[in-house]
Image 1 (cartoon, rainbow, N blue to C red):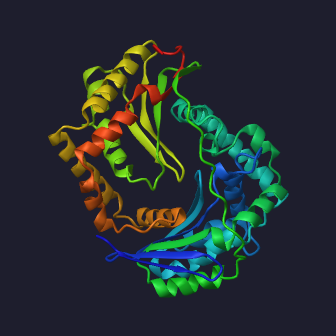
Image 2: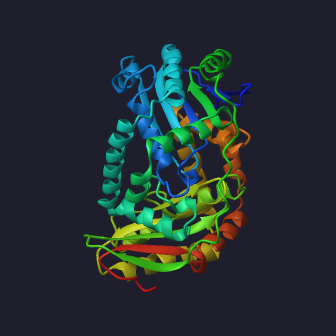
Length: 415
């Protein structure tokens, strides 16, 4: 299943990485910029995300309609997203159209017009995105939880920004951000699928070799100790939404694989402990699951559930019961082996697509980590011992270091 991985750095600092996959006739390619929501200028939260929107309004060579048609007319697709520490622009095309994809991607990244009228238009679109989050309690509770848990650190700032911060962003602000961060030292260009590395490097050099190298973006500051305890935000809704979170080390930490296994056993599917206890046995929730996010300087793992108003205390007691057992005992032998097989299978199945592979490629390059071939992942999972699980569980499941936020018509369920 593993593909051939290669990496080349251009003279201006642009990093070019590829993974050749056999048996497919398409390629996923993208450009990633080390500039995300956690790196937004002070007072201008949402800048990275708004910039990602505005570049699609037009470039020096293409109108917004021509941008939209450029790859769709070839049977391909074009997309973009903003994360905490980077922004990604990505395309998927039949492999014979890879030159066209790189051309379009370079146009977006290098030469957006960033006109005043385009900023005003996309500002309204972002306001609608913010409104959509506010109208979706399951999304809003995570945003509020992150903001309060990280105590003002950029890891807790909303990627979309706020209405106030987005209202303050001007076209001049976005142009300055683009000049400062869309530079050679900040760019990763990656492709996975039916791709040959050397011709791809030549293609990237043609379209990106002339970019000013400048300097890389400084990393996000180390976050302070996160918030702890239980808080509630009152809101008129049909359910009470509960998010429980615990800080973890960053994405390069060796405990990452133990945390992945622990999260899977906790709430990674129908056989997980949270699902079996809270949904199947107690009928306290329809939706209950675990989650995790790893950033460069820190991370968070935890769980979510939505329950009926008035059932918050029972739901939280059930979560704490499940957490307590894992924290004291870790995973017994059979569950430990089963969880490993589940995680290995999920990883391998998820990486059968070129899109997943190119995201993974870019992730290693953005973090400055050595690439780990897909075929080595099962071995990494197998190296995790039951003692590793027990040690990590005793930290993550400790209620004294958790932050719980409840969103709904009830007050704090039990404290």
